[in-house]
Amino acid sequence: MDFELTASMMCADFGNLEREVRDLSRGGIDSFHIDIMDGRYVPNFAMSLNDMRYIARTAKRPLDVHLMIEHPNDNIELFIKDLRKGDTVYIHPEAEYHPSTTLQKIINADMVPGIAINPGTSVETVMEMLRIVKKVLVMSVNPGNAGQMYLPYVGKKITKLLAIKDDMGFDVYWDGACSADKILAYGPRGVRGFVLGTTLLFGKGRPYGEILQDIRQLKF
Image: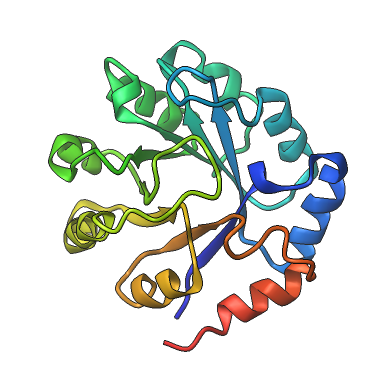
């Protein structure tokens, strides 16, 4: 089964960020997931604009920028100008008065538009935007902190999205508490990619290449 693996860089060792980017790239990671938090939309601060800029300069693999901030339209140009064509930018629809306006700016910059759906956000409330975006990032935990427990009712939401993704032209991605059993369960059903954090990738005392190889060789 072919699926994408992206590294949740908020879980990386920031004292050795250049080495982390290099080791993940050599290990075969597909992209780098950058969580930007403003302490308002979510009750936490995570990576900053400067962290994103550094990884964008250092990494040759694509970036997935996840904006967990209020009113991203106010500052979307600050993020777009330091990214590359083909990078992905996710926004949360609840964080913006007119999310389609923000998504159009992402599209106009030749980047991949995406929305992130919180556990409490229903598919029905974002249905119109599903025809605009190319990626839907399904949060299986409440956003804001790493290491949370999986919320099982999210599975029904993923089932709904998988049933309509081909007709509406988007791919589904998993973010939060991503364990091997989740990849085994949802990879074959059509989830395109998985964000890897402390559950599978970081803090394991093993080379990233070995871990990523093990994940890709999971038996379906």
